[in-house]
Image (cartoon, rainbow, N blue to C red; front, side, top):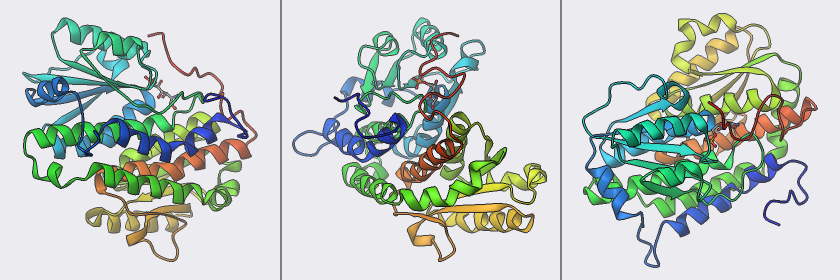
Length: 363
Ligand code: AGP
């Protein structure tokens, strides 16, 4: 059945593998027979009428918010601000005059997020819940819902919900952008670009053995590790490190690569694993390469994950080029597999990490 593991040893691996299909499913769901993007007009109008987008979420969904900030800002022409639901429930910051709230939640049941939703409803703020679960609490209580159509996510470590959230928000951004005649939205063929993303994911999934071999020794006994990246890759680093922490128990942090020299580089010693993410962003790629050299000089064991066009022979894992709005999706896939194999090689229960519940329904 849909929620069986089939031949997979763990749900996490099954759900990682489902991502190309989820990308294609979203293209079906959010377009009509003519291929035009279809997002509920009421959502588009409410968003167009607002002056700022606030994304409220927890954990991986919070990281997916960051990964979607750039595309939403470019396509909707609104500033996008992120809020951690457990913080905003108690410390709501000063808001803009016409806020629009987006709640990202795989389960739609996260109590911390609901607490913010209740307050936002009291304040009369239009709220959109983007969730994988129709009829979930956050969906029922928000003015609007968009569904992720990712199929049930069983593994505690969220994978396909993260990539589905970015893809769903790409459709929202495209629809709003078209409404306001935004040039970048007109040029952004979201269905085509997501089909390239699906292919890129498939290419990475066909290299599982390579990825496993890169991390097996590196992450088998280490106590700590670092992800570094700039721009979009910094946001992916945050998610990559959360994933590694929760399933392998390795203490891992995601850093903006340029921040290393402001403190973190003190932690680098002989053999410290550092995984560098370098998407095809000419403005910053060379700088991240420079940061890689700095940690190598201090003895770090570096793994590089690089987009094809700017990759060289020394790079470890290479991903297909995709549209810059969507690079977080293709760049996160190797990091999901890194977390999975690290957990496996450490002999842990990949699907049920200690101390964690699938959805956190207490504040
Ligand atoms: C993800 O791997 C985590 N287990 C966790 O951070 C999760 O993303 C978070 O609790 C939010 O859940 P939600 O998306 O169902 O609201």
